[in-house]
Length: 123
Image (cartoon, rainbow, N blue to C red; front, side):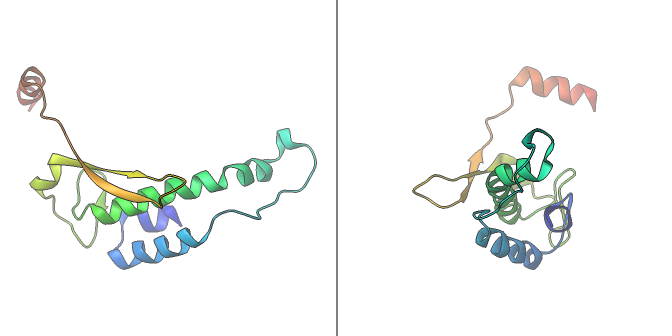
């Protein structure tokens, strides 16, 4: 589902919202793997990791919804152009035991002049 809805080409906002709604309902609780040799049991390892995989998937999806542009390899078919204003911040997600998942815009510090000069010379 992640590849289809929030992969490199991100379908329109409705698909992302549909995924977000279904993922936030899934907690991974109650998932069980058969007893047996745990060392070679990928189902058992997935059951252990599922809650964390869902958390990361939710952060990616919410961040994709927040950025309303296409930039580099991350393409939104409902926002196909880059927005220069969006190059001033990154989107990050955070979750805690007391708060649900939230995303926020985090400013990107200005590039040091010497590094900017190297990049300009490479163009």
